Image (cartoon, rainbow, N blue to C red; front, side, top):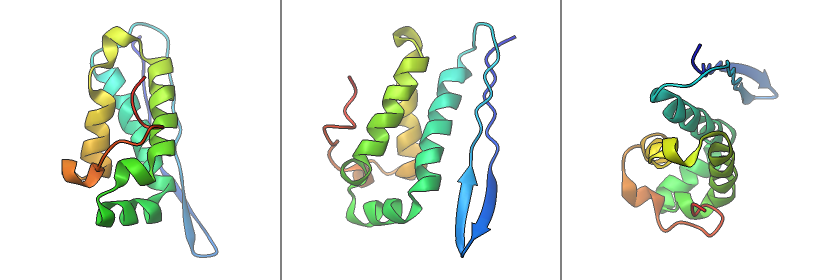
Length: 118
């Protein structure tokens, strides 16, 4: 059985604030080529869910890497911990560009020290 990543989004309204919940389910076995990208998408989507207001500001200021650098760094480290160097590719960066920067590399700005790959 290959690694299975499952993203379950649930939203709960608490005093006008929508909270998103993401769940990661991992099975045993050797994963396929899509597994590293799925994990990257999950981690980047969590950044988007929990930091929407800051992300909106970061997009306006074209400073996603600077304003979300700590979150990006934490998620990148988690990604690198779970995905071996030979399978990483550019999946994490691709997910950041597609999801957070909506495909526009100018919105990323310069990378912050916390977000730079190790």
